[in-house]
Image (tube, rainbow over all chains, first blue to last red; front, side, top):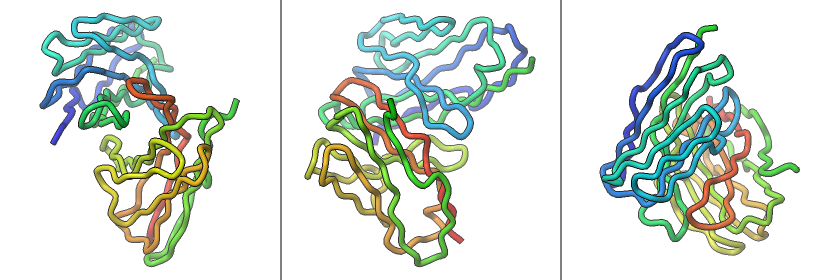
Length: 113
Length: 112
């Protein structure tokens, strides 16, 4: 079945550092989504990508849709304490008609002030 | 401006008990979903619905049931609670295909 592997599993960084994480799939995706989950809350959509090679920014966050369509990358520049949380990638499960999403296992980000 | 509302936020069940996790959305979204999140793991799809009266199984449906009598509500039923169902449950909705979900804030369930 379809799987999404995220790396790294966790990151512990100093405030002000840049962060990079990635997500790889065992099959081709036509949509990549990146979510952030704050402690005790549900995930919130950060960035959506719809085209191979696409590069999209949302403030200090930049995400890219890999040209092979089997991977995606998320970068956070100049991290701040409120960036703490779990970051998930997601893509359509078994095609997109029902909009079912498969989620990666997440990257836990901790930022030291 | 409620979005997706889940109740209760926390619940402790004894093995064999049953309960219903409530989910309601006020955005007139046709698509609704139930996921569970185990510690250190991503979200696994339990059931989903593409409109009132239509439901289908996701990746991990065993031990759960759903119904969708209205566009707004999508309750999740646990009939015979088991320790393996200890998890955080998230309800989500979307307006169509190719778009992201709006999630509720979750229900933390412990079965003892």
